[in-house]
View 1 (cartoon, rainbow, N blue to C red):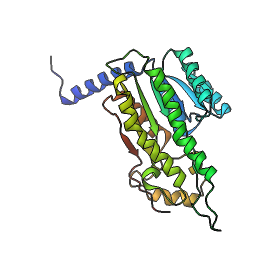
View 2: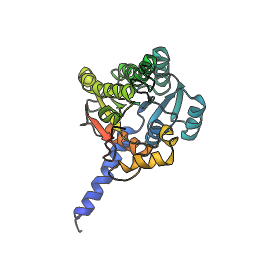
View 3: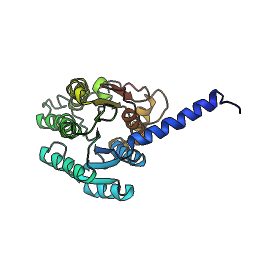
View 4: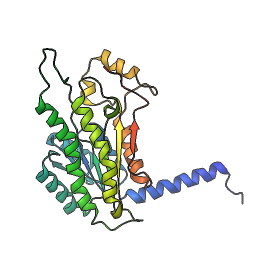
Length: 277
């Protein structure tokens, strides 16, 4: 009988690892915010396809209903604003009642803002706008992960692990453009959460990581004039396109499956570095 050559061995190993990954994900439960569209929706689709139960959280009930109808019995939804502590606690409790545990938390909810510190007529930027952006992007992220973490610590460990938390930053955290003070500050804060919270939760076997997307084809970017979109894409090194929800979702899945990734901020941007304007 002929032994496997290196290619056959690699193929066999890939099949084995894929089977192991499916076992790792099968039957787990994820809470995903910003789930009604974009990267949040893409992550719901990816994880349900891998056998994960999903609680989809957003403020747009019509979109959530549509999503869960498409995904089937592994998906349920909760209408909740991420900065509403009571609504988030009720949503997580709903998932625990339905699925029995929370193993994964993916924070995709966020809001943009475009407002310069001083307007053209010399007026200062609205403090309320700044507060709202930081509240949703930073405080909302922490609000959801803290409730999910409290559920995760009650899980029975599998190979020492009880859960994984994945937050979403932005390239603007490092390369904030003019008019992005609130957005950049909020996303930089999200990146700063990973290390101290991972240290808080290490004893429980819970990892915390951050994805920093670049130019993604979201509803906000889709509303820009084609000329503006083209100029943004030109700043991308390779491939010359916007990121897709599936690109983000595949990275989420990899982080879940690869237990040695912890406290990392991973840029997912095809090499784009934003200019000042």
